[in-house]
Length: 449
Image (cartoon, rainbow, N blue to C red; front, top):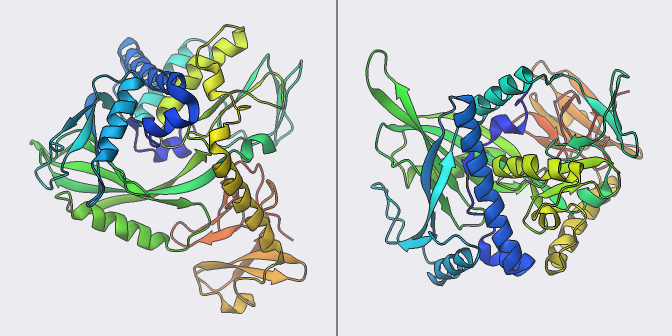
């Protein structure tokens, strides 16, 4: 289904205020790189707005301010440093204000980023789909690609044996589905948590809000839950955060609880009506990997979106057509998947060690000694001789066994009790309790006897 993956899980902040901050982007890529990053994200927001207007897409698009605030006790020098870096990147409108426009809590001095935006990503995607089909495009949903082959005659092979040939192939699957170690070693999968809670209509100013805690929080407002025949009763406050590397933490229920607690202390929320998590691919050097696949000619990649998947995706829609057509694009080297950022060498090394430690799980005992120790509705990894099994006991007490080895590159999966899934900590694949594939980069489910 179009939009049925991580697009349906985004909170859809459209922002040129980048997660790592412009002071960090400037350290990694220099002042020119920082300017190009700001320019490309601003251009992406403008492109989204122009498409919405041209196609008449009703998707709740709105220009809003964004506010970056500090946690208690953090030095205000951080704000000044980021403001000056943002100015050097060309974002002259960024300014320090006394507080964010919130009555429920005093953020203290914070940075205001003007001209940000928000929208409903699925409504927007449906509008794009209509336009694409109208112009002669064809969409094949529920068609899993098992293999991508580059070269002079690039092609994609599906799990049912069909072959699609093209002049160029774009792999835009959050994490690339083909076994490209060059790319997989440059990014890590993180889970991020989100709640949607009712607030009285008009009680929270419509804007984007972010803090600088590690892991940080992000908030926006969706307007207009309307009572029958009357004015809106509630708005929906969407708050996210509590990120961690996928598969490495078992306290997922507590993550939602901590996120709700943080939100209640700052916003007048009532019922929490939604909660979900999403997968974020975090590049080692902070910017997405968009462009020519380093190993496959005529194959192009879009990955490493960090917390800016919506704008990075649109940047890709402007950059990759230029690369395919042989046109120059000023953003090419900044986002090139083949790049190596020397200033991020420690992060590259840290991420590599995380993967190595995951492979070391091949040698450790199982999480429980045998399947009899697993309670109904839960899963655990059990050692069987030289191998490991992912064992799920259903609510009726029956055990269902799959290999615990992710078929992508061989890491050991971990049980996610909150979302009832097997999650791979190395590259982000997910499987249902019975081992069937939910999300790539794996292209098949866990092996079964």
